[in-house]
Structures are given as C-alpha cells and as structure tokens.
Length: 229
Image (cartoon, rainbow, N blue to C red; front, side, top):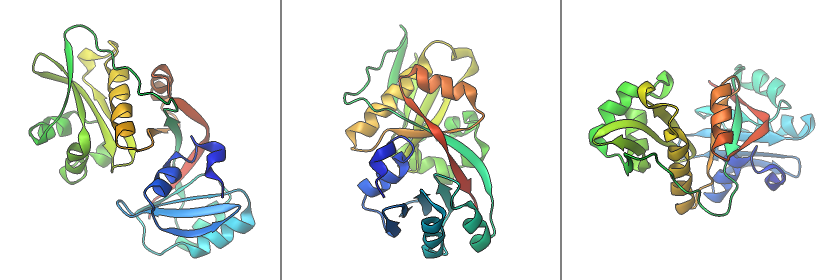
C-alpha cells in the first residue's frame, strides 16, 4: 500500500516503516504494521476485501489498534470483540526546515531532567498517561520546558518515542505564545532525530486543532479510529 499518497493521515505508519517495524500484512490495498516499542498495531485499507484478510493476519497480542479508515471496523469487532472508542485527527509539520522558536521577552527554553518529573505529573491534565511509568521514559526521551526565571510555565514532549504531545501550559501563562514555541521546539527535536514530526488530536478538541494550525502544522481531513483491548 502506498502510504505516501497521504503523508499526514499515514504519518504514524510511515514512522513505523522508517524504524523498520514488523509488517503483518501488506498488499497494494492494505497494510498492517506494529510498533514494537509500545505494541500498537497500525492498519489501513482502501477496500473491505483486503481489510478482512488484513485483520485475519493480525497478531493476538497488541496494546491497541489504530485504524485509518472504517473498512476494518466490522472485522476488528468480529475477531477481537472490541469497538472503536476514540477518534483522532493527525497533525504534521511538513516543512523542510526546522521552525524558528520565538519566545516572549523574559522566557527561556530548556530540556527537563528527572527532577521535574513530580511537577510534570502534578500539572499534566491527561489522566490516562499521567503516571511515572509512562512519563519517565518520555522525559528521558526529551521533554522541553518554558521557564520564567526558575518557574516552569509549561512543557511538551513525545509519546512513546513517536507522536508529539504531552503539552501543558499553566493557566496564568497561557495566551502568550508559549504553546506555539513549545510545538516548534519539539518539531525541531523530532526532525533532528530523523523522526516524522506528527501528533494526534482528539476529534472534538477544537482548541488544539486551532493551536496546531496557528503553529503552521497541517491537520488531516480524515480521522483515525482507536480500539483498546
């Protein structure tokens, strides 16, 4: 399957291909690939016939399935007895040069070390990902923080060495351009490491969609569909 025909929608699968991750099914109409770091399965198909064969070839063990269309929905439900419970858009920086990081006067940017883990956990609002076992590896992979003097005003990182996220700004420091600066910082860090600078946005999070567009990222027109065992 040619993923290059829609690089924003298929950014996660292209990142898996870049890392030479195992492929469980591929023909000219469908692809199933797994990220061995987090055991997530990614799949895409452009017709039901290939989708059925692809789901039959999926491994029994996975942390979740991310589908890039609804052709697989019926067959995922039938085989694994799970339903789609989350829908997300993809966002991606498609520029060739790293974006310029611009901070308001009086602010600085630096990488966070493990000493900031308790503060990150106290501030991060996404409960499903807010525990030490999840966030410590993200911190070690590279998490940027914005400071005013020695006060941490906000931060951003990368989910499981793949998608950009973990973005949080303290309420009193919002609407000053700090979130855009952090996005540009993490985009640059991903590009420096040869990774595809992409992220996910929950379908109804209009504020995040507008923020990504303000930062110059492209938001996919299509959704991805998430299935949790």
